[in-house]
Image 1 (tube, rainbow, N blue to C red):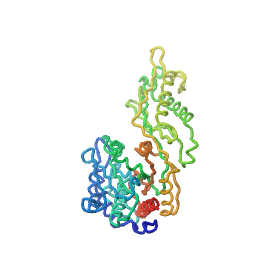
Image 2 (image 1 turned 45 degrees about the vertical axis):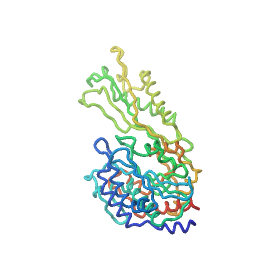
Image 3 (image 1 turned 45 degrees about the horizontal axis):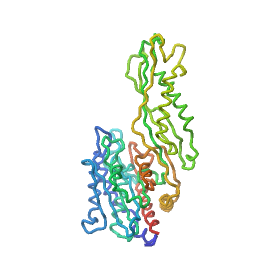
Image 4 (image 1 turned 120 degrees about the vertical axis):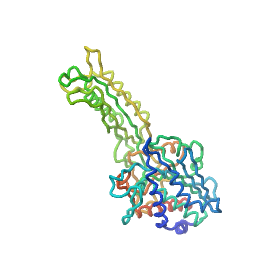
Length: 436
């Protein structure tokens, strides 16, 4: 089918149907919050509504859609939907539409986060931007394909996923689907990960290394500071040294300009804790936590090894570390006592640099330009789970999304219906180009 005829057949987003589905899905969002161990999302609540839309067009009722509900943990399913093409091995896929949401406190919002409300072009509620709006949008695309039944060479696949990020339960989503080989066929064509925002191709994301620096000194009365090892001072000076070394070893990379990263790699504290005590006590311990946001041109394991080297060096050379005043010290020789640093990491993830020479990137750019009016790819050091692993497995991963970055994970979250309509046209433009 010619490009123009195919796009005409697929038409515009059915706004009424889209809003109806999104209303039902956002109505489940209270039970989709992901903050273990208290809040475990129940993605099957979303799948029920998606199946209500798509099962009437499935092969079980004489329709074209092949529907596969895959569950590795009760209540936390994935849904794979295929619209078969005529040419074996030729495929395109829309993946990454996760069915959980971040938490929301209704007391902090100007409207109910757990029900869809409409204010002009704004569709308001938790998950409208990230990522339930995309779930509804891709569902409407697959429904339209099933209704119009265009003859396509490419098989079009949608994969709605249970999210493993921040989850106490692993092995429930994309990694399990990949491990079981259920996504292997998607290597036959571009994979569009639909989980970003602002309607433009997101061509680069950052890796993340969560770190924790435990600082041990000696607690003592603040009137006798010469008998203490001030854990706060040791932590501040050690962190300064670690950061100086990090920025020397991992400076801005030339490829960051090519990909349009707004920032280079960064290493910084975001939390500081100590056990408490009186104002007249010099603390004997504290914990500094933070993260590294790493552009994808550096290796996560290399950075983790370097950070450990920095800490080891400081522990061995405390006498070379800057102090705070004439009696500040990190070694008490008469007591044979030294301050110390212990570095630990939580689970790290790698960033991704999308292939700018791939067919998937070029069709996404052209479809975006046609639907939105311009194309300006961007990169961020925010992190998306799993897509680097997919790229390493041989998938041509490209990323996009049609919510708003300004409301991403924020209170009073909303998306724009007009943006979702343009996103639908991007999808149909991608399908049409790959058929041309």
